[in-house]
Amino acid sequence: MKAIVTVIGKDQVGIIAAVCTLLAENNVNVLDISQTILREFFTMTMLVDVSACKLPFTVFSTLLENEGAQRGLSIKVQREDIFDAMHKI
Image (cartoon, rainbow, N blue to C red; front, side):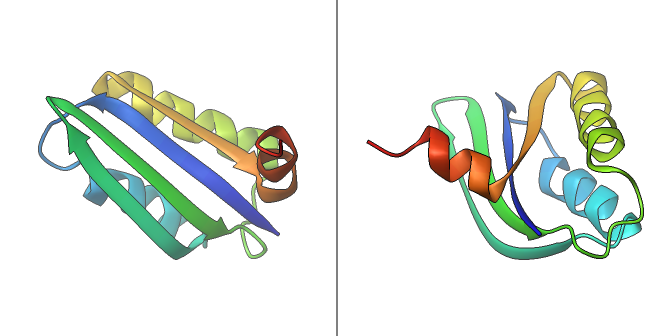
């Protein structure tokens, strides 16, 4: 299953490293990544494959949210099909 991970917050050293480390530790593969800095705000969107993740999706989501909270960031994950449905016109 594919999912979309979004990261938003004040720019700081190590955001990409922390998120990618967490993904790798949970067997989540990054398929595509886009990141930019808008003024002082860091934004990143990732397409990931969560098929090999051993955690239930809700637990994985909470893990990402907790990592974000520790760094003052908003980190969210949504299943790709839900993300696509929400963004159709």
